[in-house]
Length: 317
Length: 317
Image (cartoon, rainbow over all chains, first blue to last red; front, top):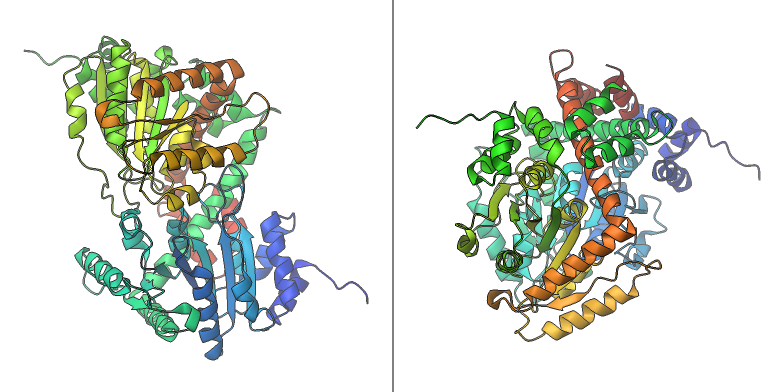
């Protein structure tokens, strides 16, 4: 068998036919920062915009993988094509992954309407992979109706997911140290849909009540979305249809209110800025042969210049 | 009484004489992003480099304020001038502060050898104030021997503190949900000194043992620093002298090994980059009258351009 053409245009065409291998190759280009990446992105551009991006986050142990799997089952029941990006936030220092087993997802492994990919977040302070927005473009262009981006809520990753997603699901569970959950900065402000999983356990109703009462305290402008708080037993598929319904209601609201357009522009802004900054860092690092920024930083440390003058020097080089 | 001169040079001279009001005014220039900020930074530059910056972080409830206060007492006993920056990480969305009462610090309020300032972190994703490195410059130039930067370990703030500090203290306490503490990405990698506070409570020895065994698993190069794990009862001042000793030992090791110089260059790099990026964002936002980045982002959303081409356009404008 001869090796098939793997130019970006070919890969995009095959990905649009639903060929999992082509989708995987495109995401590898994204993850590896391949020299063809610019060409890949340009080839994807005409096919953008169809997918609804659902962020799913929660503390370790609330049942994220099980919930994702249950959501995939329900979305497939509705005949939708689904992409899943499971982002493993790593320590920014060691690159060691926190998440492990994706076994529960394996029931979808042979379904051609589902594409699943784990992504490391190595090398990026904050947890969500630098490559995630671009991987979303691949799955979007490949014809996914819904893309679930799943990440564990440690560090800054849940805030980053919320900035990426069209709809953000925050998952909780009883007995997980709810004081700490509630104290986590921003958890009450990032969710569009809250789900108390493991609802067959003691304390689920209490978590739901507490959350509802905390959410009701927030000031919301007229016509704003009030995030629902649902209950699931994801391992049994209980309540999952209601979660999908709530995501869909949020999507409709976001489209009509203009919030969806605002979020997508913000996502594109973040993406453009990140690409520009990466290009600038390369430039700053290599000006004059050595590491220009290191040299300037040394001058700041030894007191021969100040950081503003150094920044000026960097920008005018 | 005539109003005293408040030019940056005057303020710096008075700050170096230990005048708290002048130090406070300089930090306000920093916090407000005052038009005089460049001039302030230039005036501080000749006096840089003396202070040892100690980061102190931990989950809510481990006793950070009490520990900071006990450390200040011990440092004063050693006749050192001390600055304290208490950074309140806010939600990136609402700007609401999580921390509150600084009452325990009030015992130091009348000590002219101690300067204490709370800083909000508003407007900066991640928790640690954008202004913190510059506030450190003020306290450094004002003659502080040690500057403690205290922040609650939520979101990304503890990683940011570790990047700022010469020595980072990570505070823990028994019964605080240690599984979650340990699972927090990076906590085992950011501390130079670990302290189990509330050591008179059940479980303190267990936390210490667990932490030591986790720390011993990490691979370290020859000659690397092995972070000690100490115990304190900060409310009684118990163990605080040993913490100060450990910080000092780390300082000596860091000086001799070159690690201190590396950290300070990194801190200056981060600071220069942040200033350059802020300048670029202003430029990007205002090119062509409207918001250039928003316009480009809209084109990416509607599929008429791709993010790389948009970044190119931004950088060549």
